[in-house]
Amino acid sequence: MGNKREQLRAKFAELEEKKKAMEVEISAIAQELNSPGPNKAPPVGMKGNLVDHEGFPRADVDVHAIRLQRNRYATLQNDHKGIMKQIEELLKEIMALPKEKNVSSHPDSVPVPTPVKVKSTSEANRGIDESVSELVAFLWVDRVEPGSPAESAGLRVGDRILRFGSVRHLSENVSPLFDAVVQEVGRNINSPIDVVIERDLGRQTLHLTPRQWSGRGMLGCNLMPVT
Image 1 (cartoon, rainbow, N blue to C red):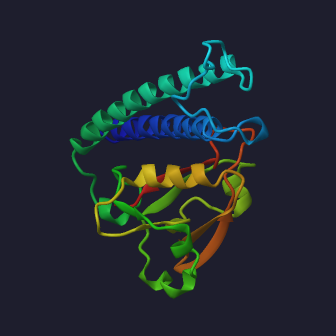
Image 2: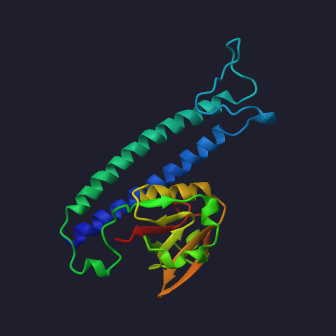
Image 3: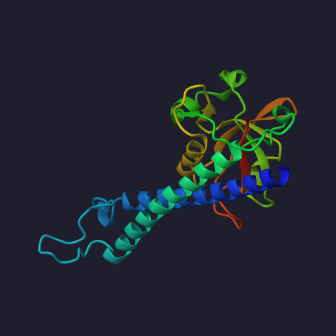
């Protein structure tokens, strides 16, 4: 049974990595299509016309490139729906497994997304110290890849995350855990994210910068929910 559980967890982690990569690419395409064109021309967006009033391809934009981006965006959206369905079915299978003995004493438990609430950046930046005593760990670091942004930030296996940028655990059922964290990463590519962690009964703030590196993903670590 333990081997089955580990296999399902490994599959869950693999699907999460794929989902995160999709969401980063979706966000990048949307940002580019919704950015002003040359000479501050209005953005074409997802549905803007690519022909002029005479019916000819617009000369002020790269029509071919935009069509490719739109097609890629649509493909990613469909793939994202598919992978979310796989994750949903996998979680059902994991939840159906008998609970391990003493599971409550180990953070390596069933990876079920936990409700979180996304606060505005201004709220998050008012000062971590003012509410750090109220923060509750909702993620823990399962793996850190050598040379990754996570390693550079000082994250270690076993660190428990109390706040990830503007994301922290609350009782309200507002937003799925992983979606909120992925959105936070997508909004802060190449920009540092304040991550409040708990380690050896002490608390500290690390600065994690999502970026492209030689490995997979933007962080180079595996995060698991605390249950």
